Amino acid sequence: MAELTATEARPTRAYVIHPDLAALNQLREPEHALAEAVALAKELDTAARELRAAGDAIRALRCRFAAAFSDPPLHLAWVNGRGLVWRTRGRNSSAQRIVDLTGQAGIELLGNLLPAAQGMLLSIEAERQELMLRQRLLSYECRQLRRWLTGHQRLAAARRKLQAPDRQSAG
Image (tube, rainbow, N blue to C red):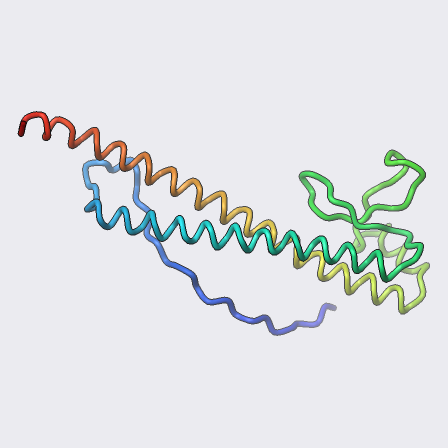
């Protein structure tokens, strides 16, 4: 059973109430919408920076694994759509297969290793899983923030369209 470890709490960066774009007849004041869009843009910049840092940590993990084993039975590989995975060694890419260390093939492979190597691989596996979760959550956060910022742009365009007849009649 995995040991529970304390995690450091990250401070909440921002709480933002997002508008319902379908309710254009109940638009907020422009100053409030602009302030929210500015806060979202800053949040997107912060999330993107954290996402780049997660990518750097993934590259560092791969280098550390390569340095720890001279001839490992597995290697860490980036597979589009799946992220960082364990692959068996093979003469060519078609002879390689993806291995889940918690699955039957992974358990058999770990059983053939020395205890020190098992411990090192499991430690790297735990870090791999944590990094992949962090990378996926940050990617999702960036996508959502971009979608919300796009929504603000549509909201501003709709506001301009609604206010355009008022300006013409006033002139």
